[in-house]
Image (tube, rainbow, N blue to C red):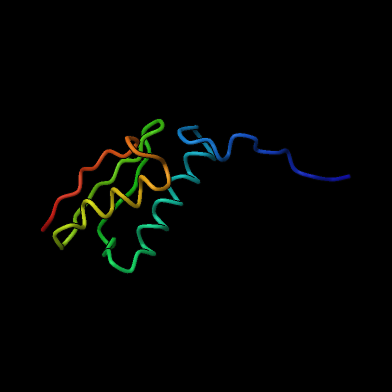
Length: 86
């Protein structure tokens, strides 16, 4: 049987490589999918097990909303926010 090696750590938050990239992509997708948030100027990076939100938002409450979305994926306390409101 021909197959591919399994990635056993792809769902573990904070892992380097595939896990970090998947987590980052999940957070980015969730931010852009939120109808009540303009995430056009938000960038998402990973630092170890932490998600870093950087950039700008336009409306009051968008910072808190972006944090809540990211925390829904990686867990409370694993989001560092550097978002500014214009």
